[in-house]
Image (cartoon, one colour):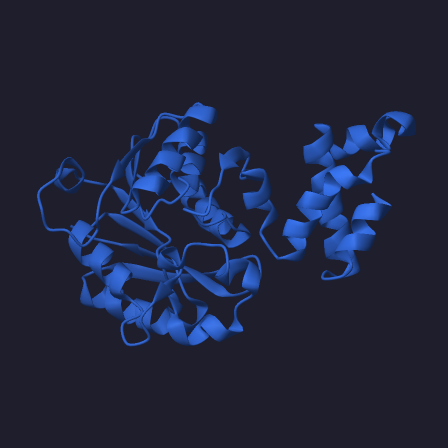
Length: 275
């Protein structure tokens, strides 16, 4: 433990180094933190600290630990993650919280997750509401493969299909009616790239992160205009809340609300379509 922390302190502060060290120990040992704490020191004190060196070197290059170990725990799910998918974040869990805790007037909601990536949103919703019919789409074939693997490993019946949201070609996905549409699309403007950390810029897929400065709402506008769901849920750029509200009004949505995430940022927009 101390060896890992001392190495990581080259690039991380004390709290982050300690958190990463625990993560590494749990993964390498196959034991939980509580098991490590109560286990006999002789069985968990790794004599050969060199087994940690390849992992530490990757962490010191700011490679996300989720990619190093190939999975992450999020919203009670064990999710495979690869460089083809974004790493699920706490603010996205806030989005899921809002959806699963609303009392909808429809008992068997049909849900579409646009830009599903690892499938985290779709799978979390299905886990909380097994009676709902949930579909996730993404333009990336690699992401869809990851999402399908996550459905299998978490034993959740969610359909994942490759689909370009900007395509007007008829498809089974586009012909269905959905009660709920949710999306966490790319929303970081290119002008914001300089403020971001290397662990994101160097490793996570840029196509899932960035939008042009001159049209940052292009994905939201397409989803809002194309699907016309009864209930709409978006994770958004905290700087574009007013623009989002105006765009949704233009597309006929009402009861538009901006919600704060767990960090106090304007991160989630909800809206309703009266039909």
